[in-house]
Image 1 (cartoon, one colour):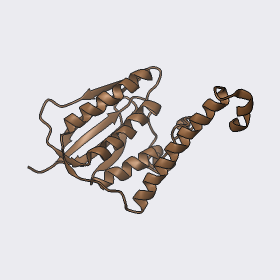
Image 2 (tube, helix red, strand yellow; image 1 turned 135 degrees about the horizontal axis):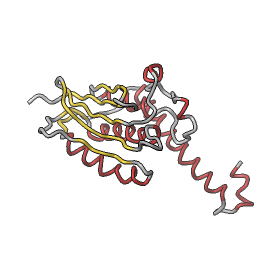
Image 3 (tube, one colour; image 1 turned 180 degrees about the vertical axis):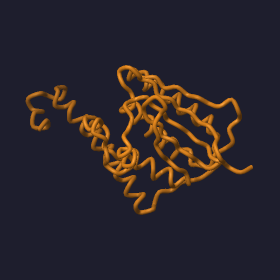
Image 4 (tube, helix red, strand yellow; image 1 turned 45 degrees about the vertical axis):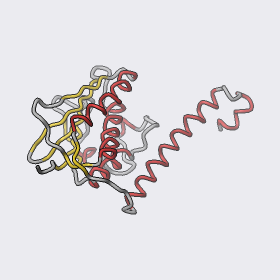
Amino acid sequence: ANAALLPESGPDGFASGVIQQECVRMSRLIGDLLLLASADAESWAVTLEPLELDTLLLNLYESYAPLYRKNSCILTLALPDYSLPKAAGDSERLRQVLGILLENAMAYGVTEEQRTVELGVFCQRGKAVVCVSDHGIGLSAEQKMRVFDRFYRVDTARKEKQHFGLGLSIAKELTALQKGVLDVMDTPGGGCTFRLQLPIVKQ
């Protein structure tokens, strides 16, 4: 429809802008579908190696903090006082997983009153646990059970056209490939906390 309007609106008109936005959306959808197709075909490749999580999270924070500020949100980073042991994972795939969690939190996990998202890490029972916590409206028990399903979006997210309900399923698949676990729980006081657990490298 907007392509048909181009002769009238011109290359700098409203129709051109809509077409450009839709091309970006469709490109993202195709990319996500190709990733999931690769997972189904078991052709995803990961390289597990010892990772320094504090360095990785610092770099991730520096990448996403400006984007959060641009959207009038706040991203905080909490690192423990003790020295973190190395975790086994693929650095690029891990950044991809955490990027999905941070983008979802910014899109759905903030409210007018509470616009802060926390990124943190700690060790527990031989695992390194990376958390992305928001203080939004949270998820019901049923929603938490289905949130990692492909194409699933909670009712409050359906108006967000930039997301197709594939990000969390991709994150889940990528985490499993790294022999990790990705789950979601309630944030104390309200909201959601996504936990990424990775095995610690034995010294």
